[in-house]
Length: 635
Image (spheres, rainbow, N blue to C red):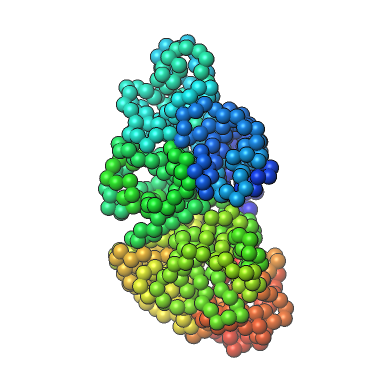
């Protein structure tokens, strides 16, 4: 959230402590094993209690689950029935910012791993252990979830037995088994759930005899409790009847970053998907999602297109057939950044070590090019996987296997040698800063496309992902009817209601007309949304005056990225960045709408602490007297 809001909340106090966000209580973290003791710093405070679930992606090894109640060095296997194992060199500690690993199974050299961390927090997740007693029949156990559980996993710790699963979508009279692909079993009143207790059938209390220990993992659903105002949902459990058509839309109220799915009335796997591992939006096409299977030790696979995430949920692609599907979904990150370095980096390819382009944050959107060659400006996003488009052309969308997103600190384009002349402008999706939205057109005027920017976007780039459509750019400074084209030098044109339905976007949606460039029926589109965030980014406009003019963006250490386009007449899309130099002398630039090599001898834009400066030398390009310009600047 903006710093001033944080200060006001701190001054006012909060009986429940600081506000929590999904990033505080959940993390998907990918890493490569190195057989050396190490810490995984994912930002989740496990001294509050919680669960770490880890799986080898490369090879067929068991899932391993570690929780703070069972204790360090002990683990359970989701794909098996064995009791809690002990290995002092697996997970070695639960930390205030993640967890530590030893040299054993969860950290083998040259093996790739996924980990999912769930922190204990009201209205999200709880861990409870209990021992069987002499209670005859059903047993009631207290919990601290602060809401009614919608998904419960129960496992015996000191004896071999299945994982018993309650899910709101199958009800209290049925239990499933996490270690099995089966349809589960009907059993009258096997479960009971309230906001302070859960009840298990006597079978899960050793039938009234002592000597058996259990652990239960409890998950909330639609309980609120998170975000700036403490009322946003970050987890939802539900069910739907998949019609098998590939178009069934599931509404969550948020975009998911993690999903577990299971057919409850047919034999099928417990699929685990997340946005770090290629859970992409393929639209009407079918691109296989990378997934792991909770009930099997198999390595990561890409044999099915299971879901497409959307800004408000996901679309089932029919991979599980026309059956009842249960799911658990967790919201994508939601915090507002406080500095530009959290969400943007202009990076040269400095190493052949993966990922090559190192931003030091999870990267969601990139523009890549080689500056000393005649080359295209390649635009890619995590949302669309290995697809790419060229900002400088209307050519059809391409795919390239060398585009890789499964890194915590950057992205990879190709596997060539280190080359300082390859540059990548790297962006992270974040509230108030920028967002990426994939959608399918419907040719209906007034179509509202939801987004998660949290504020009204001030600049939008839209590009069709099929056929040879151009890049349409809207901006609040242009109004609700005028647009530019990212791939041309053309001046702004008034298209009436064709593109934006004569409607400015809101903090939750942007509105489309009927033109095929933005909204043709059943065509897939990608949209990039940008906004002004104090101290981080600035979307704005200015009028040239042919004299040295500082454009005040509200920054304190100048801009690290500047994109400028003349709007009232033709002109290129100029890009400057701090990697290649924004100085008081000559600042090199690239033009997004061309394949031209970098220009290094035009001294038009200079550094300024509050933003950037267009000087009197730019009187023929960036500072023409009485000409109008739009810009995007990032601190």
